[in-house]
Image (cartoon, rainbow, N blue to C red; front, side):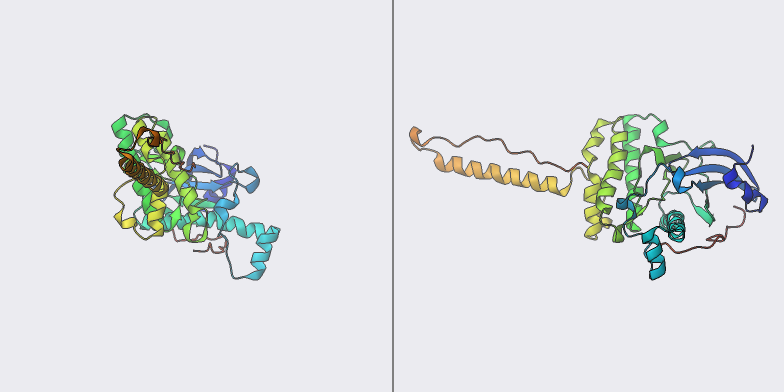
Length: 315
């Protein structure tokens, strides 16, 4: 195939041997199937800032690009040419670091090989036939399959949370149906929980996106639509190790349920105290309980233009 401009120079430089096809084009990058040392892999070429449709909104970027260098901080705040360059380096480097930490922790993500300039080289996720894996959104499932997939993806999200990170843009479009199981991809907008006050809300949205998609095939999964809230509370309280699966309701819903039960007991007590009273004293009022309203809902280092990590032999 004709080599795309964003990656052709890497063939000339000997970084890769060949570009075989364009695999997909997303909001922030285009992914190609490439060959290196006789092995197939994936090369993610990040788009220029002006060409992206994904916006780096403050809810994602809070806590990023922190540095002790006051000159760099001023440049990034002023969004000078130098500062924008630093921000771009952080954007690329964040995904590489997140993938490396997640893969090391056993989370099902593509294995990252190395980062060179604005290209991330990683494992090519394949299906049971050895072909590039398709997205979760491209399949239909039985109710049993949907329920099983929901649990598997939940465990991957939990594993990522155990590394102190939240995906930030999780949906059926960035989960691949790999031979080893559903595999999470696309982490440039990953959220560092310790540095971002929006992490809990973002986690809730991530899991809700997946839950609502799979609920098309098994509506019973909707009972887990807010499971991200409970999962995040376990993270906050250091009890992730006790989690055995998605929880059906968020803590505030359970509190509302307790308030409802307490109100019922109070009404029952009043009714009991009024038994035997004359008709002029009247009976207890029968107001319905109010329903609970559930809500809807490491510093990236500067890098040079060399590889962030030595590419493993034979990759």
